[in-house]
Image 1 (cartoon, helix red, strand yellow):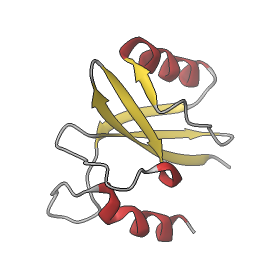
Image 2 (spheres, helix red, strand yellow):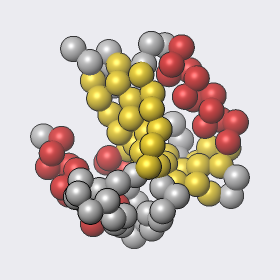
Image 3 (spheres, helix red, strand yellow):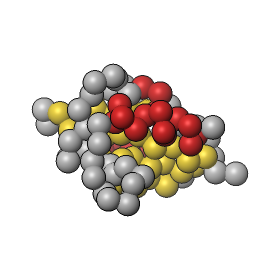
Image 4 (cartoon, one colour):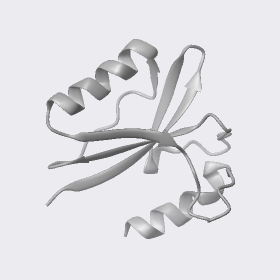
Amino acid sequence: MDITQEFLVLPCEGGVRVYGVHDFPSGTWVGRDAQKLHVVGPVWVRPPRPELTAAQWEKWQDILREAGFSVTVGPFWTSTPSGRYHLLEDVRDELLRSAR
């Protein structure tokens, strides 16, 4: 059975910040450039440290792929059909409820 995980990826000063569902800092602004990292594989993936340089971000994805994980990166959208962006803080509880 495969395990699916999603991470929020926010660009910052030439790199990225990566947050797992339980690691969302309260008050974090999620703008239009936010992305969602979708990882599917045989075991749980531990998130990297929160701030990565662009090279570290690429390397982490490569390591996951080489280990047999499916890794896709796309825009961060809410579950609403409108496709509007929301503060992650506003949708965090919804995401946690759906993970149970």
